[in-house]
Image 1: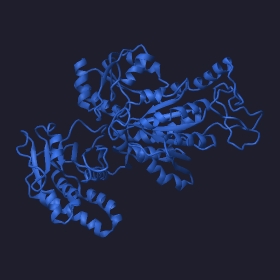
Image 2 (image 1 turned 135 degrees about the vertical axis):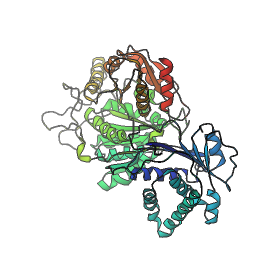
Image 3 (image 1 turned 60 degrees about the vertical axis):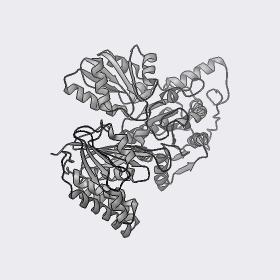
Image 4 (image 1 turned 90 degrees about the vertical axis):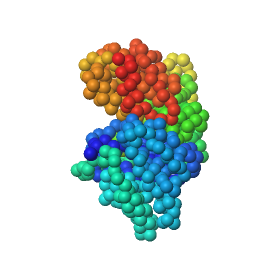
Amino acid sequence: MAKRDLIIRIGGEGGEGVISSGDFIAAACARAGLDVYTFKTFPAEIKGGYAMYQVRASAERVYNQGDTFDVLCVFNGEAFEVNKSQMRPGTAVVYDYPGGDFEPGELPPGVFGYPIPMTQAAKDMKSIRSKNMVALGALSVLFNIHESTLVGALTKKFGKKGKEVLDFNLQGFAKGKELAAKLTKQDPWRLADVQDPKDIIVIAGNDAVGLGAVMGGLEFFSAYPITPATEIAKYVATHLPKRGNHLIQAEDEIASISQVIGASYAGLKSMTATSGPGLALMSEMLGMASMSETPVMVVDVQRGGPSTGLPTKHEQSDLFLAIHGAHGDAPRVVLSVEDVHDCVDMTIEALNLAEEYQCPVILLSDGSLAFSTQTIPAPKPASYTIVNRRRWDGQGTYKRYEFTPDHISPMADPGTPNAMHIATGLEHGETGAPNWRPENHWAMHEKRFNKLNRIVDTYRPTEIDGSGDADVGVITWGSTIGVVREAVQRLRAEGLKVKGFYPKLMWPMPVQQYEAFAATCKKILVPEVNYQGQLAHFIRAETSIKPIRFNICGGLPFTPAMIVAKVKELI
């Protein structure tokens, strides 16, 4: 039978082609018009260790990686053992046998097994590196991964390397098809047939941030490489110079944020990208940007911490740092993305907000979303509004920090006639000259903070998923939103009264919206991927709500089934 939703997981040793195999399947499904959401995890070592790639493809919209797999393809014994406990009746397992490094023995009850001698076939072809091509060929036959779209993805990748390389990989693919055709299919899993073509692209979260930055008018980018944010810099490095703009690889994170502040002071729309350890190093200079009211945008792709922590794993535990990671009272705006589409849209919005409000804006992504690929509508540059900073009109005496009705002062680029001014980390008066009188310090604090007040009213409203009263309201943030969306749909389909609340403006906190939502719910559940319950902490501190924490932090995201089970427990 055809299944509208199919989840395929590939596992094996890092360096065996696990990640590239998943990329090819995702690209093929997208070319076939299916909605795709992927999840991948790999070791921190350069080579070696368990790697996994999961592809969820559907004829309908998908919001997350799913609960578990329907189809498992394992390249070695470790991958088999790691995933064995998740096999359930009906699961299909494709494994490297005979000729691999293990014998699976008796499979769990109700599990369908398909032995494919991937390693042996690759050796016969005189290239062990074609093992994953053999696996792809077998998967295409067994589970209706459309051959034309899969071959198209392979051709696009390997055709650049010459006909010989392409032909060799296609031979491995054909060998896998031949081996699978000899087997008798027993399971029900089959990808949906090709859908109508859509105007979509398939892109990973980090690349989507880079795309949003370029579309948002970015003029200067500086960053120091750090997992899992480096791909943002790679994307920007490829495309920003094409527009005649500037990119620097800095010697460390302190240098990168310093260069971004300097470039912004000089008049350029500027940003950097980092992860938690890098954001921690930037904290002093972010305070400098707050004090000098300089527009800067920072993307923080969160990873497991503290310290080096889990460099390649998923976590959303930098909220404390993003909101309050500064000495003194240092205002900033903090946003959080839900999915790959948000990575495009909200990068543009973050650049706009930094320019409009002349302050640091931190955009939170995470390690799962960084590498996940999704099908999203092809962005249309003309559909976006681009905001640039308010510039001095040349009238009267220029005061860089002039008190205005909306607390935002016009800026002047260095060299503007009659607009010489000082911008330092010292407290200052309207002209920029140092001024540390108590009444001035208070007035400038009010200026810096009050200019952000209208963001709560003017920035995109917080989304409420559902209507009426509910027994449980679920408040969550970041990529966990997609998981909660599906869980709420499942629960309501069972007749349970459940609603969702999905903030993307994390700070300043839209307190009235939180309060209004909570007033319609008997209980408030806050699932988040960190140990301390960081959003729950801010909810307790800033509102009258008493949330119920639900935390995990093992390096993996929530699944919809976990949320469903917790809500039922509360009800």
